[in-house]
Image 1: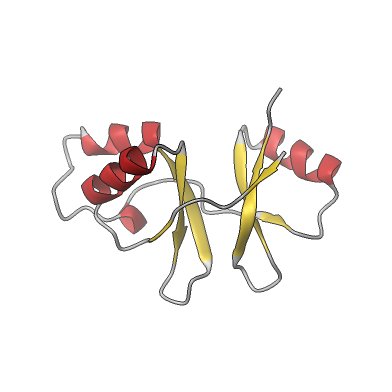
Image 2: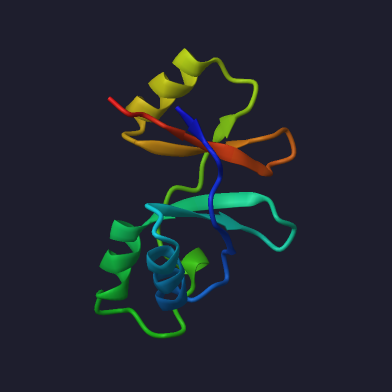
Length: 112
């Protein structure tokens, strides 16, 4: 199922600030974007919480510094069946859908 992209934040945002944004927006994930607005990743609350509590974590830890899904992302021209198969292979429940220039159009979610 395709959903609106939801909140998008810069990948240089601090992890603790991103966690606050995610909680405040009451969403399951945030899309990350670079300085040009292109999608660079997707991060979930569980991923942020795990990194927030890690031994190496500091207030200066940025989203771009943590491990998370950075693609390849689902392209808008992909067949739904192919996109779902690729997501299942990579064990993803959600994947950003991007246009030919890398801008997020939405998020594809596997519901079953």
